[in-house]
Image (cartoon, rainbow, N blue to C red; front, side, top):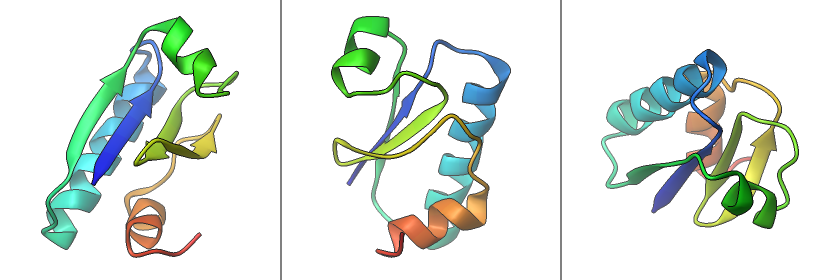
Length: 79
């Protein structure tokens, strides 16, 4: 699984990344966490508001900081 954190490196983006890493650690799953900081790549994924989170290339959230628990729900296949 690939988890992408889309954002330019602002504090909100860093918090989302930390929450995503904590969710992966809690679940004990194999996942690569990638930071996408290039504006062109972010816009190519259809994101206009950061931070955003994508799972396997599909944007699941934009413009808010998901909690660790919200990310866990997404990783388990929930919305």
